[in-house]
Length: 126
Image (cartoon, rainbow, N blue to C red; front, side, top):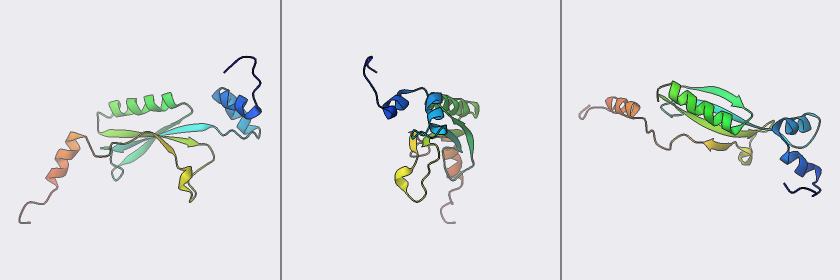
């Protein structure tokens, strides 16, 4: 930000600290705060068990929580971090979908799960 340069109210609010942005929103301003959600998925698979790790006001905190949870769970869970604008959702308009900050792997890369999945495959002749 350049000193001695006048900024509009919106520019000033965007450059403000998150708590100031929240205050602007809470008092009727137009800037809505950004939040980050962290979800853990067993084996990184959306079809398996999953749970919410937390909701954070800072991206770094969400990424750190995801890393810690993956380490704590011994590699059995992978986390996804999403960025949301408060008070907005998809509501039939997928242009409003959350921004993916840390994605799940496109293919399950966890070896133990992959090995177990081959055990479930039918034998030839079954």
